[in-house]
Length: 71
Image 1 (cartoon, rainbow, N blue to C red):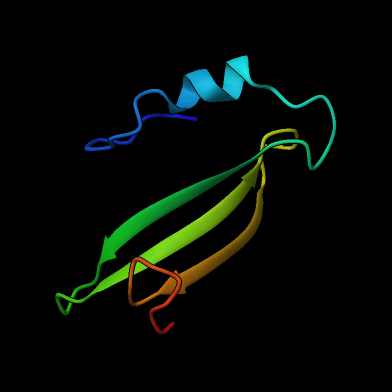
Image 2 (image 1 turned 90 degrees about the horizontal axis):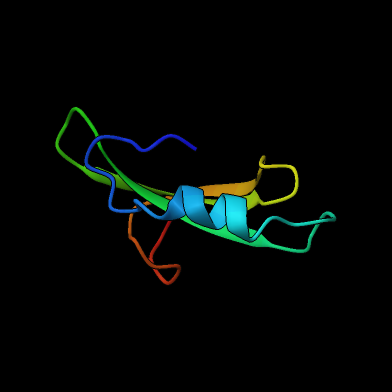
């Protein structure tokens, strides 16, 4: 994982290395990103990442940062 400018997760790459999974579905990570659109509104992208495959397993774009909000 590369660190994105303005990212607050400086230790994320350490977690990927030190807590590596030895098989699928052993360790998952959740990444949430706020995206500002051209019209000034915000959307939140939540992604579930598998540590073993390092692929996005699931994602959802929502209007609110919490799961209780509408999508």
